[in-house]
Amino acid sequence: MSKADYYETLGVNRNASKDEIKGAYRKLAMKYHPDRNPGDKSAETKFKDATEAYQILSDPNKKNSYDQFGHSAFENMGGGQGGFNDFGGFDSGSFSDIFDDFFGDFMGSGRGRTGGRRRSRGQRGPDLKINLEVSLEESFNGKKTAFNINSSEKCENCSGSGAKPGSKPKTCDTCGGDGRVRSQQGFFTVQQTCPDCRGEGQVIGNPCKECSGFGTRKKKKTLS
Image (cartoon, rainbow, N blue to C red):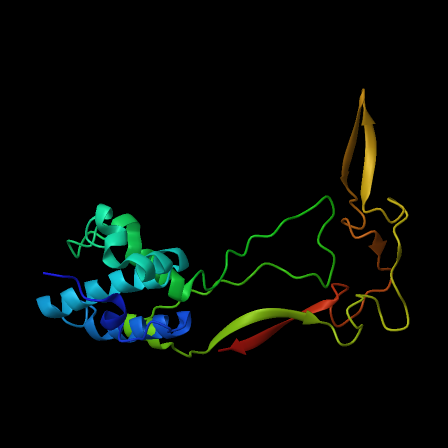
């Protein structure tokens, strides 16, 4: 029995854009996903066929090969792109890759780099990561929800300087504004963060009463 045309499987024409192909697969995946059709072998087969078609047509190189040679371009790989003969064994985690293609690393890793000095005020901090439980249907269709976070915002009283209005920070006498101090230990010179300014290079003689010299204030914010 000959295999169905991948474009016909997804219900798109041969000139369909990548977004149109993705949208067509999204609808079919939602309709025929096994979680929504438990025990339905027909739906399972249609889901498998749609996923196989999407894996080929969403990849520019594979799509080009298919457009030129049809299914014969993948005959040596078995079952179209390999591993599709049984629903439970997509090759190389193909469905996981496709799912990642839709949603990606949504919240980011939040890793930051630190140099010799402390991070100065006003620089971007680490990303926030919020754990939310969503259903499969919400993953495909999207879901809007609200949650509260504690955010640090610039102190309005001192405009973020940390100093009392009318005054300003002064250069640290201990490190000369470098933020680091050095000491000689035998043949080696040891460098460390200045203990007085904590790497900022400046000290605040008259701290702002609103933020206690930090330049920022904690504030609860609602995001959605």
